[in-house]
Amino acid sequence: MKKHSDPASSWKSLRDGVVGLGERSVRKSYYPELRSKINDLDRQRNFYQSTLNSIPDAVLVTDQNDYIVECNPVFYQMFGYQADAVVGMPSDLVLEEEASVFRCDDYLPETSRRFKRSDGSTFVGEYRRSDIRNGNGDLLGHLEIVRDLSDYIAAIHKQQQLEDQLRQSQKMEAIGTLAAGIAHDFNNLLSAILGYAELAHQRHEPDAHALRYIEQIMVAGNKASDLVSQILAFSRKEKKKRSAIPLAPLIHEALEFLRASTPATVSIVEDLEKTEKLILADAGQMHQVFMNLYTNAFHAMEEYGGGTLMVTMRCVQESLDGEDAVGEFFKITVADTGKGISPEALNRIYEPYFTTREGAKGTGLGLCVVHGIVEGHKGRISVRSEPEQGTVFTLYFPVANEKLEAEQRRETDALVGGHESIMLVDDEKMIVEYIRTFLSQLGYQVMSFHNGLQALEAFQENPMGFDIIVTDLTMPVMTGMELAEEALKIRQDMPIVLCSGYSSPLSPERASNLGIREFLIKPISLYQLAPVLRRVLDRDGSMHT
Image 1 (cartoon, helix red, strand yellow):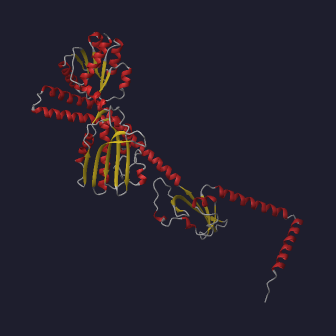
Image 2 (tube, rainbow, N blue to C red; image 1 turned 90 degrees about the horizontal axis):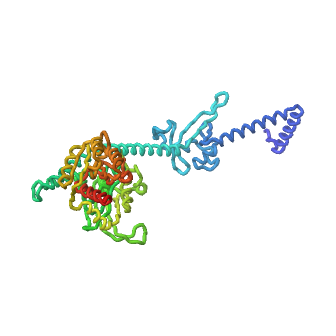
């Protein structure tokens, strides 16, 4: 039986052999060549390791059986493992267990799949796998590369969000352009409807049966005018003028407006305090606030199978936002028993274009607009909601000073006429007819024209024959602004009143800077026009006496 040689003697024999080889190699000049080969191998090893460590993606090398042999630092960082902790483990360790059900979105590479980190969290990555073979073509293992697409996906989502916002902005811009385009013609029609209704109202006896129908025409016409004003204000084509008004009727009117379209599964409870106190606000914008809040509540309850909408209003003495000073406010609550809002969504409800409604059911602009209007009226809005527990919006608006209402009422004092000569210019014959008839009844001498060029020619022939010019802004041949500019070149003191279906592109401030005395938005009530004319004429008359 052959004995195993002593390990010490074997090592000594091997050492002597290596030394002897070294001596013989030196003598035969083999050692320098061997040292050069070793150095080359070291350089290649260092280059390989440096290259592997420099790759920004996760790299793992496996053997023929897909067991991990080596990984680069990015791999450990990406997947959360300690260095060398996965060596010898199967490479599918980092794959999501149900990766086969993953479907790539249109914006993801076809080679994408889901991966699993050491803590169990997953992410989407781009995956590449290739064989490692020697010079004879024998399979040595596999090279797998993983690129984390989390930042890429986030950027794509952000880009899609911006594109959606851009498309929505373009839609809103188109709506604004359309609104501005039709406002002039629509308000001209409303001017004629309301003007003739007011003339008929003046001629009827108070107990006439037709009087009630005329008043209803005037109410409907004014509502149509408010609707146009809301669209123009929303598209930023018009600055809204605020007045001291009661708030409870606006809250009730918005509820009544939507009551007909409310599903039978939703009940409405209304509890509004009776008060003579007023709010300094734009009625159209207030109507928009409550319409948006009610609509959101209805949709939340409809999706939840029904519920109750409760709207309350109280006048309270409170200090807002932790301020020491106590003020008087209208406190309005709009509460529903719908599905509620998740905490994540609750932090974003006022963001433009954010919506929790699926598909194209919501624009994501409603609460953003509500928040802007409330803040613009120096109010406050807060929300309290929990999933499955419903939502409560609470709004605070400051109570207005009653003196503001008194100032507002002075605009509608008793009709006062005069004997002055008025140049009336408008391309709509119906408007010219009813305004001329009304002003003539008040004692004025009225000369009417249907375009600015004819009016200018008459003014050039007799510039002192007119005491005031009342002209439409948008007209063919010559606009009202062009007529005003030419008239003021002839008579710098000539009082001019401009009228328009919408205020853009000429704001009241710009009109005043150009020498225009007053700027009126159509439809123009006769009860609005009369005091304006009297005020301008009296002011300019006193300036020249």
